[in-house]
Image 1 (cartoon, rainbow, N blue to C red):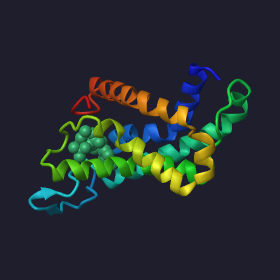
Image 2: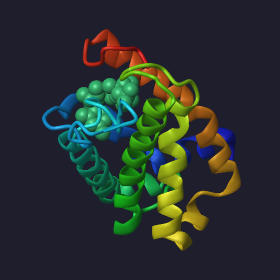
Image 3: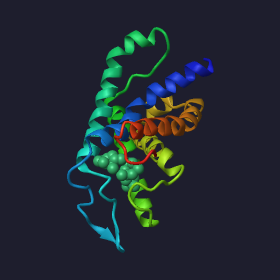
Image 4: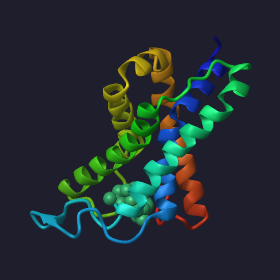
Length: 179
Ligand code: CTP
Ligand code: MG
C-alpha cells in the first residue's frame, strides 16, 4: 500500500467525522446547548454551540457513512476502503461534535470568548474525541480500520483540511472567523 492509497483510506474513514462541524456552521442556530447557563461568570459553552447545529452535524455525518457504504462496492474494487457499521457510523460524527463541545468548554474556562482561536485544540479536538468514541463503541472495527499509519496520516492531514475548509467557509461568509 503506498502513501497516496493510505491517505485516501484515511480520508474515507474520517469523512463521517469531517463534515459535522461544517454542517453545524450551515444549520446552526436556535437555543444554545447550555441554555445560557454560566460557570464563574463565563458561559458553560456559549451561543456558538446549538442543539440544532449539533444534531444536524451528527445526522449528516451518519448519513454520509450510509452513503459511503452504498458506493463501497464500486470504490472497493480500486482501493480497499472500510465499510461503516452503524455504531461507528454514528460514533464518528457524534464524537466529532462532542470534541467540539469539549473544546468550547475549555475555551470558556480559560477565558476565551466565543469565536476566539485555540490553536491545535481547534484543529484536533474533534479527531481525538471522534476516534476515542469510535474505539469505545466499535473496538474491533476501530482496530481493523485505524492502523498506526492511518492514525498518523489522520493526525497530520486533519489540521490542514480543517484550516482549509474553515477558510473557505469564511470566504463564503458562512463563518465569522477563518478558524
Ligand atoms: N455551530 C452550532 N453548533 C455546534 C457547532 C457549531 O450551531 N455544535 C455553529 C454556530 O453557529 C457557530 C458556528 O457553527 O457559531 C461556528 O462553529 P465554531 O467555530 O465551532 O463555534 P464558535 O462560534 O467559534 O464558538 P466557540 O468559541 O465556542 O468554539
Ligand atoms: Mg470557532
